[in-house]
Length: 90
Image 1: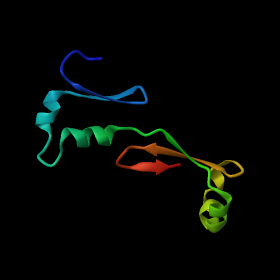
Image 2: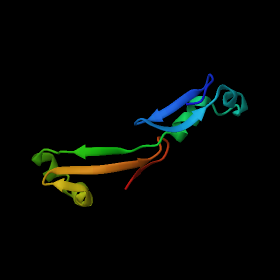
Image 3: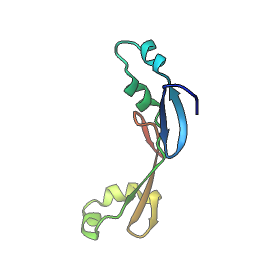
Image 4: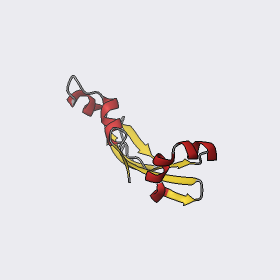
């Protein structure tokens, strides 16, 4: 870690970017430090869906589209990557 008064952005324990206080002054009027941090925040999530059989029956088309993410009967695991501003379902 760098010495100084910077803000450290970390997600899942991995360092993705160090934003120093001077970076805040270089940002335009329409962008603030939160926007920079959110844009750089990488996602590595797993959405696990376990619908009840009644719901599964009502939403057949949706779960047919999710068939490639089926881990076991009635359990769907959908990986989500990208950033907070642009999440991507793989």
